[in-house]
Image 1 (cartoon, rainbow, N blue to C red):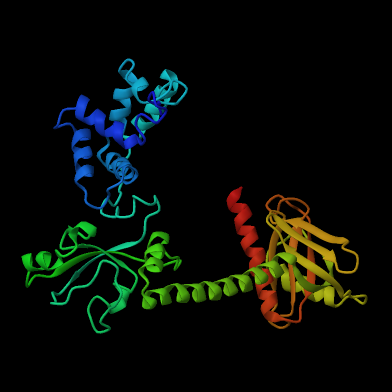
Image 2: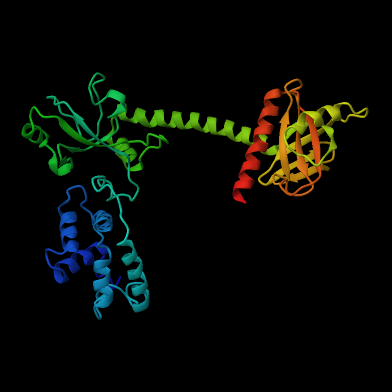
Length: 381
């Protein structure tokens, strides 16, 4: 931003020049001018930052965000009233590049919720909101909901929860300026359904609290509201414990399965699943059957089997080389996979590798992992 002779910014926030340019250089019926007036009249935002954010959102919907920038960039010397020459908008070339990006945005359709703007003064991050229509009642609540009748319609299915913000009632924004006017709003629509627009204090999916509302809860001094924060911390702790369990399970999966390697056998020119049972039985009939402790790893692109004692690789195949895998119903603790001498759809020679695991469920998990890897790599190719 340019500085005045005293050394302060000439215009401290972009909102000011965007507002000024609408008043000086656009007609009152122009789309951009109408958007600026709409933002200025919105009672939910009152700081330059909040109005700037709401202006950007509204302009994206109305496809006019490029208009003030185009006026600034293509009117000689106008940009120097607001920006230095070494800034993007102060530089002719960079300004044109930025304008071209905004012109592209005018070709897109944005679906943004302009009602959800009460916290734009504080953050770009937006909370979850719900629009409700309730039967009328005589008792009025507060903007920060501190209590709910358990048998009320609002409390059903957690439509409204303690800690939520009452943002609108019957289309009227609830702000510090409307204090004492709630009864007036209600009298206008007496006997009609009550329409509420509520800002939720937490995300329903992640249960994450909305930071600006947390600040309101802490500063309210109401102990009942502070219980929400304690409950949230407890839920987060439980969620972290579940996450740790899942991580440990994934870690064990990534570390490989501890199984016994029984041996391998050449099965000929066919590698389909019908050969699995025959291959397992042939290996088990061998006089010198092996039972070598190994680690069976299902990797991103293939499998690797290493000996426990010295990490020596016994076999390593890509999923593209594996033609089939499975086990038999009679001896479900034994399983095998068949791989070719090249990609399975081109291979002419196939070998079967047989393994043993004492846990049948683990065998099923291994086979599912093999199947998923096979599908994943074939889809990628």
